[in-house]
Image 1 (cartoon, rainbow, N blue to C red):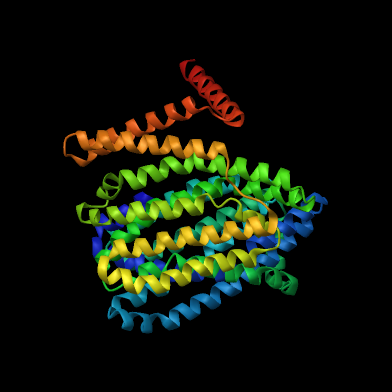
Image 2: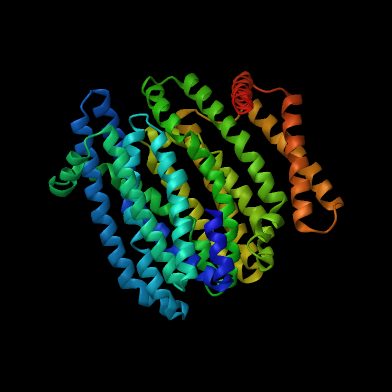
Length: 475
């Protein structure tokens, strides 16, 4: 995905990349309305039907979710298309209208694919999501966007490539769904089955939650909308730090499958032990990424172009804010325990903080001010959310193992930055040298402090697989 973004900035230029980024910042927050909470509804309905051995009912439930997603997606796309001229007039840029209208179609294909893939995950089949979203989608997106740009399609061509890639991913996801459930039953239900009002009631609270969180991730870009250069540099920062939240998403299927029974038994000790373990595992992956973004951002932004280096301070600040979001594993207790409204309140606290602070910080500090507002807001919202989790469920994600991960990461950052400063003043040399040393120090410090028995078992298993693969290659 960074390669796709790099293509735009290098082929079309920084201003065009800023225009594209502004379009996505408008469409993405409204994308949550398109989903309309059907991810949660699909997971619940399909998992229950699968447990009872009724694939027909699982397929019909998926079809009902598809009907809602397509209907809401078309409605959102029409609203964006109608509002595009007014948005362009506000920005004084008529070139915004056509790309924005094209990109408004993207959430339909994206979320149709999501419904199909979520249904297979509810059956604990995880490989299809990896094949469709992890491999097929980014590769096809890169290929189509590259072709569109080199054929002279400009930003509009890129937006058309995005829509086409999401649509093709939806087709592939449907084929994968058909391997586990009757696809024809799902499609007929999507076409003719009346919308289940209970489904809508279940999805509505998630729409509010998703809209709040998506707006929280977009208002900082809107505050920079007067400068395509600032938008482009800030978007480049976001491209990297989004991987911190994706680390937590790796563990989401296991958490969603394991946590509800523990909550149903009201076993607070077991819930705490599970949440702390998952939070520690997220930190093992997320903390080194945070060190990479906060301590060595020059190398990451340099690949977009030298002009993007104005975003180095913003990248460091955003990394800290997004780390707080990555370590918010205890929030699943609220989401899966029927208390999503408290997560909505936490998200609203962040949004309100941004709306107050952005007009103050952006005129003074530019993209660094936007990052300060966003990063501080994210930390604030996660503190609020953690407070709700503790007050309502007596659950938290802190542990001695988590403290060890933080200590090892800080040690890696300190030594890596010293090496970075001592190397010749070439960004690639400094970047790779500093990052390599930071990684070695991080791992060595973790081992010295003592890994948790769970991590020892995982490490042994990983080393065993590496040895097995090496032996096969030698043969």
